[in-house]
Amino acid sequence: MHFVRAGAGAPPLVLVHGFACTHADWKFQIEALAMSGEVVACDLRGHGETPGRPHECTIEHYGGDVAALVNNLGLPPAVLVGHSMGCRVVLEAARGAPERVAGLVLVDGSCIGSGDPEAAERTTAQAIRAAGYRNFARKLFEDMFVAGSDPRLKSATVEQALRLPEEIGAVLFPRLVAWDARNMERSLAELRAPLMVIQSTTLNSERVRVPLERGQTSPWLELVRRLAPGARIEIVPGVGHFPQLEAPKEVNRLLREFLKSMPKAAR
Image 1 (cartoon, one colour):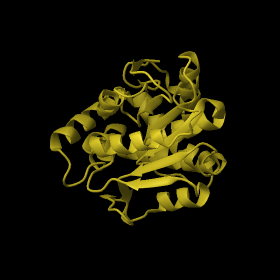
Image 2 (cartoon, helix red, strand yellow; image 1 turned 60 degrees about the vertical axis):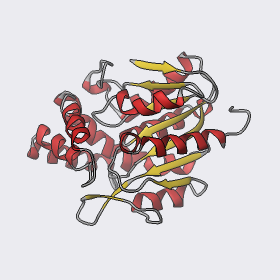
Image 3 (cartoon, one colour; image 1 turned 120 degrees about the horizontal axis):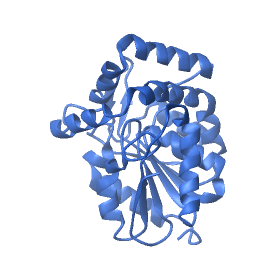
Image 4 (cartoon, helix red, strand yellow; image 1 turned 180 degrees about the vertical axis):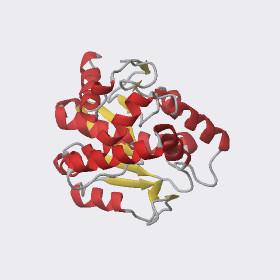
């Protein structure tokens, strides 16, 4: 697994990117937060500089990989920060190795799978085949940005996403949907570590991504409130699906505050 590591201090932050992304999505967090603590950012299997075969690219494998990374680096219990698909990955890591987790932060998460997991996976895979994988991926990422987003960031992010090999992306995304249906609710309900949710967007009734404003809610946030009632929920308004890139100062401030709220034993 390729990773970058900077800074020193406990609890360490372990940053986990989303679908068809890389550790570089956390560049502003690595740069700023390594000045006061240890930061690790990784590339998941099949992404960035980490090799991976299609059958290995699942949320379950990714969660195990992140937990193993914390262990193999000899880190104390870490604050795992996931973005988008990475929210699932860090929840899976916490399910499998709770002793390695001091806290979780979910950045612009969602729950897009429900009902029978196998049926949800099949339906998603069929939709991707019907559209063609590259068309599906391009539209998925273009729709992650809002009217005020930087067009250069949008273009670069879409092009990065299209570098994920089709043989991985076309099976991973349906598996993500199946994981939601199978594991999302129990992962939130069983979580015992402190949790913060940083949210910037939601899908409206027409399934169009729109920015959230402070004080608004969404089905995802209501799910978190119901299953993890102690969670801290923060809205980053006016940006798209990548608040860590579009509003890095605000995201960094929230991460620093969350770290300071950790029990002294974790620090």
